[in-house]
Image (cartoon, rainbow, N blue to C red; front, side, top):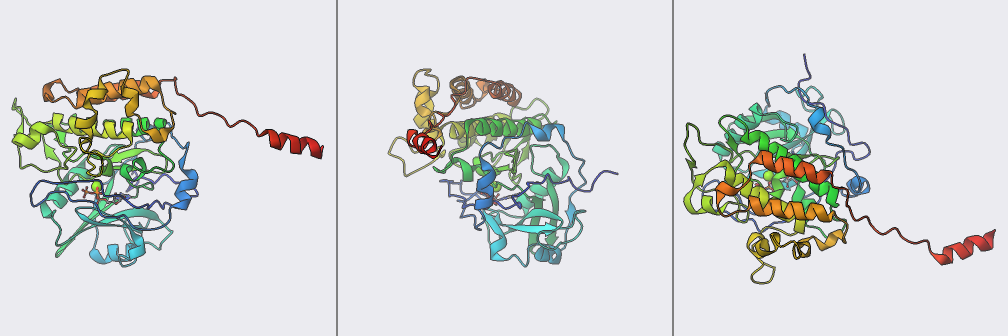
Length: 396
Ligand SMILES: Nc1ncnc2c1ncn2[C@@H]1O[C@H](COP(=O)(O)OP(=O)(O)OP(=O)(O)O)[C@@H](O)[C@H]1O
Ligand SMILES: [Mg+2]
């Protein structure tokens, strides 16, 4: 019999702590009982250990080859999750979103009981805000979808709890938190190659969903729902808004409009008609954020630049001007061919006409090509200080 839960890959020396502030990203929602809200700050302090390992750690497409066997999510008692998170202690808090708070916890290696901190397996425990906007329906969607779907680029749901009013979800712990926490900071920007790997991983996760029969539409793709492990393997999280796509020759499903401003496809916002192509638009927005290092919506930018898509659209298909869009924090260290390919891919994903957007499989193929581009502009190697040479010579 296979393991009850996927074996965690160890992040040696990291201790599994990530926890840097998660920035509010100008998220906005449509008026609805389950609308997403602005993310509040992720809280906890242990940044430094992650920092030391961060740069140049790029695993070579590891998860795809190493598919663990999964068991169905386990039902936990509330008391077990309380002790797994040390009574939901404030310093176990790793983030907060529309659903509620996320805590770090420990369970034994079989996933059956709480464990002492530092032993067994690290998990992320999400607890639904009882007064929050997202309700039981989203919790159930998450358990239903993630309980059934297993893929190296989807976060693994280890268990859940529904006891009285309490609704909780227990996930595999993703050491580096969410992509938005890394992408929009100025210090230590994510290197180009890591950005491209994350894009490919996320695309594979989404392609897997779209490939189901009926297809599954994720509906809430954004950088805060792309989680990273300590090797920058990316996984999609948050299936509360996922829906089955149209079947039997129907072109779309009609839904109430939920999602996040700045990411949702315009035709979906206007009509509520949902197709897999709405996800592809959102994926295009994520590509644009990876390229520019800028948030999809930011009211603090000068007027005309608040909406990243509208601002950058004219540049995307202009080979000469497109490099102006590249995140300046990369200090010129990127693949020029990659930038051109990525921007034209983003432009296609962001087409106003959903019918001309590529399929997720086509997106995966394009991103696979980008990984192999060898025209990386490498950082300038620092020249040895002449002063140092003089001193060395003097010693001899
Ligand atoms: N499995 C996990 N492992 C590690 N950290 C996680 C995990 N799930 C969530 N987090 C952390 O908790 C934060 C909040 O996540 P959550 O999904 O509740 O909200 P969000 O995605 O930021 O916003 P929204 O509710 O709009 O989707 C994330 O940004 C991430 O830092
Ligand atoms: Mg989320």
